[in-house]
Length: 335
Image (cartoon, rainbow, N blue to C red):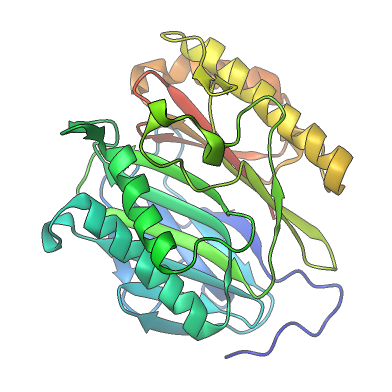
C-alpha cells in the first residue's frame, strides 16, 4: 500500500471534469484514482483500474469524463468483483454485477456490499465516506416490495453480517437505470467522516416502516476534515420534507424544494461543523437526475437561473428516483 500524504498542505484527491469523451484515455500522465463516463450502458472499461461508464445518459452537453485525481502515485488492485485504487489516504472502488448470476436481487445487493466490506477490512480503509448505487427498475414492484426496498434489505443483510456501521453511515445515492446490472462505486478512508443531517428532513435511517421493512442506510451528507482542508459529499436529495414527497407532478416545484433542502443542509453544516462553503453555488459539482427527459428544459432553465454565474459544474443525467412520484434528484460534492 502507498504511504499516506506527507505534505500537510495537500488534499488527498480532487474531482474535475475532462473534455475527453473516452474515460480510458482521460487523465493520461496524471495520478488517476478513477475515471468515469456516462452512457446508456454500464460497463467496466479497464479490468485493472476503476475506469468505467455509469449507465445513465447525459441529457445535455458533450460527452465528458469525471476524473478523480490524486496528488501522489496510485496503486491499483482487484478484490472479488471490485476494481480499486488507493493512495495511502483514500480508496476508490467500483463493481458491476449481473443479477442473473444470483438467486435474486436481494442476494445480489448483499453480495455487492459484502465484497465492499471485505475489501475495506483487508485494505485498511474501514470508513466509507460516499456510496453510489445504480440498478434498473428501481420502483418496480416485485411481490410485496419494490426493487429499491429489496436493495435496502440486501444492503442491510450485509451490514448485519459485518457489524453494521460502527460510525456514521456514509452519504449515498441510489438511482434507477434503463440497463441491466447492479453498479456500485464508493470512496473510503482510514479515518471517519462527520455525519451531517438536514433539519428540514427526517434522517433516512429513521424513516417509518411505510417506506419499507428496513430504513435506508445513509446520511444526508458526509463532511471529511483532512486536516489541510475539508471535503463535502452530499447524498441524493429530493423534494422530501420530513419524510413526505411534496409537489407531485410539478418538476420545477420539486427542483425548488430540493434546492431549499440543499441550502438548509449547507447552512446547518456550516453553523455546526464549519464548512468551506455555505451555498449550493459554491459546490464543485452538481449531478441532476431527471426522470423524464421531456421535463429537462424547464428544470435546466430554473436551475440555470438559480445558479446564475456560479462556476459549479452541472451534469444532467437521465435516471429514475427511488420514489415513483419524484421527478428530479440532486447530489453535490465539494472536493
